[in-house]
Image (cartoon, rainbow, N blue to C red; front, side, top):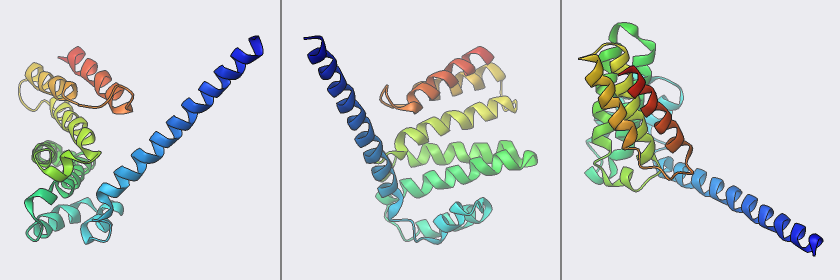
Length: 178
């Protein structure tokens, strides 16, 4: 009977591992599929090369030819580009983080982003943009960290998603700094 129980436990572990592998593959495939239709666009090429200033110039022009309900994911990448620029250009960091924050907020209103895996990432990065602005002393410090705290708490990720843990950690960090 002991061998039978051990074998049953081994099978359960194996099934759990297979489910985990399947879930990871599915998540990767859907995240990639969400941006797949944009992979041949000029702005995605520029983004993948780290040419964020060029992305900032390219996406707004590109959006003129795209229906509103398909603009969320490109706006997310526009927010990401502003965020990266904020990290690399100290003289304009606050301006870039404010622009990133605006893009993360706007992209979350679009259908394509709401239906993609970028939704929770955009919520999380919205928190980071607010956190960076608080670090820079943009506005009243306690209020700025409180906004970051609330943004991190809004991340709507399943408990098993690493973003859930990271957002909870950063919410705590924002609360401590407040």
